[in-house]
Image 1 (cartoon, one colour):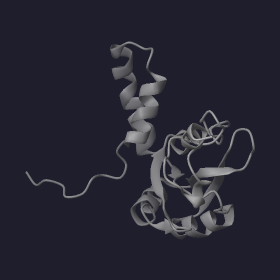
Image 2: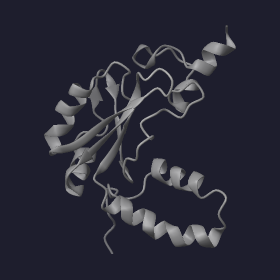
Image 3: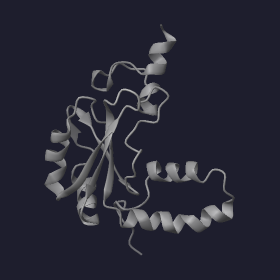
Image 4: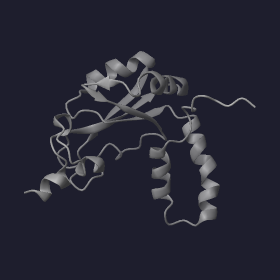
Length: 165
């Protein structure tokens, strides 16, 4: 039997699977097993992408220009710091078709935008409230634990900076 040489793009990613685990943390194993196919089906038909590792200075227009090369964009939602309402390095891009979302992952995921390698991942769909960062400081959790200086992400990570104040 021939073995595939590349991974399927529409399989659940570690990002999506970790969200599912957090959501189902308090449910028993049997319930969790019953919900897995439904979750996987959502991703197999998803038209929404989560885009991460964006510069805090990347504009909505830049994202729209780049991502529209793979298909017509239905909606673009910028990720915002929960408290300051400023961009915090992620967004959601919703296409009209699943194939456009897969094409975007194939051709744009891993490329550079504003000197940063961007990550794309299928998302189960945007819901109001998900545009806000979930870190303690209002931004992204990952940024709070960075220990290197990154001007595109606001300098040092917050937890690291607090340690040396």
